[in-house]
Length: 154
Image (cartoon, rainbow, N blue to C red; front, top):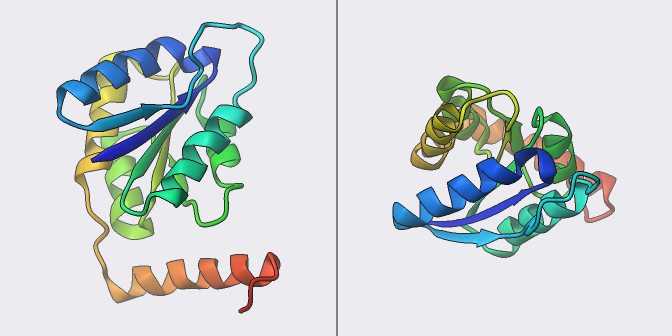
Protein backbone atom coordinates (compact mmCIF):
# COMPACT_ATOMS: atom_id res chain seq x y z
CA UNK A 1 0.00 0.00 0.00
CA UNK A 2 1.17 3.52 -0.78
CA UNK A 3 1.30 5.60 2.42
CA UNK A 4 1.98 9.31 2.76
CA UNK A 5 3.28 10.49 6.12
CA UNK A 6 3.97 13.93 7.56
CA UNK A 7 4.75 15.45 10.94
CA UNK A 8 6.36 18.34 12.75
CA UNK A 9 8.91 18.11 15.55
CA UNK A 10 6.38 16.67 18.02
CA UNK A 11 6.00 13.49 16.00
CA UNK A 12 9.45 13.39 14.43
CA UNK A 13 10.76 10.32 16.29
CA UNK A 14 7.50 8.42 15.87
CA UNK A 15 7.41 9.25 12.15
CA UNK A 16 10.93 7.93 11.66
CA UNK A 17 9.99 4.73 13.52
CA UNK A 18 6.84 4.30 11.43
CA UNK A 19 8.58 4.94 8.11
CA UNK A 20 11.12 2.22 8.86
CA UNK A 21 8.55 -0.18 10.31
CA UNK A 22 5.97 0.25 7.53
CA UNK A 23 8.58 -0.10 4.78
CA UNK A 24 9.69 -3.30 6.52
CA UNK A 25 6.08 -4.50 6.26
CA UNK A 26 6.22 -3.99 2.49
CA UNK A 27 4.43 -0.64 2.25
CA UNK A 28 5.55 2.08 -0.15
CA UNK A 29 5.99 4.99 2.27
CA UNK A 30 6.50 8.57 1.08
CA UNK A 31 7.96 10.80 3.80
CA UNK A 32 6.71 14.38 3.47
CA UNK A 33 8.77 15.61 6.40
CA UNK A 34 9.86 16.94 8.66
CA UNK A 35 13.22 15.64 7.52
CA UNK A 36 15.20 17.16 10.38
CA UNK A 37 14.23 17.91 13.96
CA UNK A 38 13.36 21.59 14.39
CA UNK A 39 11.58 22.48 17.64
CA UNK A 40 10.16 25.61 15.97
CA UNK A 41 8.67 24.05 12.85
CA UNK A 42 4.93 24.14 12.17
CA UNK A 43 2.79 21.12 11.29
CA UNK A 44 0.38 22.52 8.65
CA UNK A 45 2.76 22.35 5.67
CA UNK A 46 3.70 18.72 6.40
CA UNK A 47 0.06 17.73 6.84
CA UNK A 48 -1.03 19.56 3.70
CA UNK A 49 1.68 17.80 1.69
CA UNK A 50 0.73 14.33 2.93
CA UNK A 51 -3.01 14.96 2.45
CA UNK A 52 -2.58 16.45 -1.03
CA UNK A 53 -0.52 13.42 -2.04
CA UNK A 54 -3.30 11.10 -0.84
CA UNK A 55 -5.80 12.96 -3.01
CA UNK A 56 -3.42 12.84 -5.98
CA UNK A 57 -3.07 9.05 -5.64
CA UNK A 58 -6.45 7.34 -5.25
CA UNK A 59 -6.16 4.23 -3.12
CA UNK A 60 -3.31 5.59 -1.03
CA UNK A 61 -3.64 6.50 2.64
CA UNK A 62 -2.13 9.22 4.79
CA UNK A 63 -0.69 9.43 8.28
CA UNK A 64 -0.17 12.74 10.07
CA UNK A 65 1.42 12.99 13.48
CA UNK A 66 1.80 15.75 16.02
CA UNK A 67 1.83 16.17 19.76
CA UNK A 68 -1.86 15.48 20.26
CA UNK A 69 -2.89 14.85 16.65
CA UNK A 70 -5.68 17.43 16.89
CA UNK A 71 -4.13 20.21 14.82
CA UNK A 72 -2.75 17.76 12.32
CA UNK A 73 -6.21 16.29 11.73
CA UNK A 74 -7.62 19.79 11.27
CA UNK A 75 -4.88 20.70 8.78
CA UNK A 76 -5.31 17.52 6.73
CA UNK A 77 -9.06 18.08 6.59
CA UNK A 78 -8.48 21.43 4.85
CA UNK A 79 -7.48 19.53 1.71
CA UNK A 80 -10.61 18.93 -0.41
CA UNK A 81 -11.68 15.30 -0.40
CA UNK A 82 -9.66 14.30 2.63
CA UNK A 83 -11.47 12.57 5.46
CA UNK A 84 -8.96 12.62 8.29
CA UNK A 85 -9.75 11.09 11.66
CA UNK A 86 -8.03 11.44 15.00
CA UNK A 87 -7.44 7.88 16.19
CA UNK A 88 -6.59 7.29 19.84
CA UNK A 89 -7.25 3.56 19.90
CA UNK A 90 -7.36 0.56 17.60
CA UNK A 91 -11.16 0.72 17.72
CA UNK A 92 -11.36 4.37 16.65
CA UNK A 93 -8.92 3.68 13.81
CA UNK A 94 -11.02 0.75 12.56
CA UNK A 95 -14.30 2.67 12.89
CA UNK A 96 -12.85 5.63 10.99
CA UNK A 97 -12.15 3.36 8.04
CA UNK A 98 -15.30 1.18 8.33
CA UNK A 99 -17.86 3.94 8.81
CA UNK A 100 -16.24 7.09 7.46
CA UNK A 101 -14.04 5.81 4.66
CA UNK A 102 -11.24 7.86 6.21
CA UNK A 103 -8.19 8.22 4.00
CA UNK A 104 -5.92 9.96 6.53
CA UNK A 105 -5.28 9.07 10.16
CA UNK A 106 -3.92 11.49 12.73
CA UNK A 107 -2.11 10.26 15.83
CA UNK A 108 -0.70 12.11 18.80
CA UNK A 109 2.97 11.29 19.17
CA UNK A 110 2.93 12.50 22.77
CA UNK A 111 -0.21 10.52 23.59
CA UNK A 112 1.01 7.00 22.81
CA UNK A 113 4.06 4.81 23.03
CA UNK A 114 5.55 3.89 19.67
CA UNK A 115 4.10 0.39 20.09
CA UNK A 116 0.58 1.74 20.71
CA UNK A 117 0.81 4.20 17.82
CA UNK A 118 2.08 1.46 15.51
CA UNK A 119 -0.86 -0.78 16.43
CA UNK A 120 -3.31 2.07 15.77
CA UNK A 121 -1.74 2.78 12.37
CA UNK A 122 -1.72 -0.93 11.46
CA UNK A 123 -5.41 -1.19 12.34
CA UNK A 124 -6.21 1.85 10.20
CA UNK A 125 -4.32 0.51 7.19
CA UNK A 126 -5.78 -3.01 7.44
CA UNK A 127 -9.44 -2.04 7.86
CA UNK A 128 -11.51 -1.53 4.70
CA UNK A 129 -14.48 0.78 4.28
CA UNK A 130 -17.61 -1.26 4.97
CA UNK A 131 -19.45 0.00 1.90
CA UNK A 132 -22.72 0.03 3.86
CA UNK A 133 -25.30 2.24 2.18
CA UNK A 134 -25.89 4.35 5.28
CA UNK A 135 -22.20 5.15 5.63
CA UNK A 136 -21.78 5.91 1.92
CA UNK A 137 -24.86 8.14 2.04
CA UNK A 138 -23.28 10.21 4.82
CA UNK A 139 -19.97 10.48 2.99
CA UNK A 140 -21.83 11.58 -0.14
CA UNK A 141 -23.60 14.30 1.88
CA UNK A 142 -20.24 15.63 3.08
CA UNK A 143 -18.77 15.54 -0.43
CA UNK A 144 -21.80 17.37 -1.82
CA UNK A 145 -21.51 20.04 0.86
CA UNK A 146 -17.80 20.43 0.17
CA UNK A 147 -18.41 20.77 -3.56
CA UNK A 148 -21.19 23.32 -3.04
CA UNK A 149 -19.11 25.30 -0.55
CA UNK A 150 -16.11 25.38 -2.85
CA UNK A 151 -18.17 26.27 -5.93
CA UNK A 152 -17.69 22.95 -7.71
CA UNK A 153 -21.36 22.16 -8.20
CA UNK A 154 -23.81 20.44 -5.91
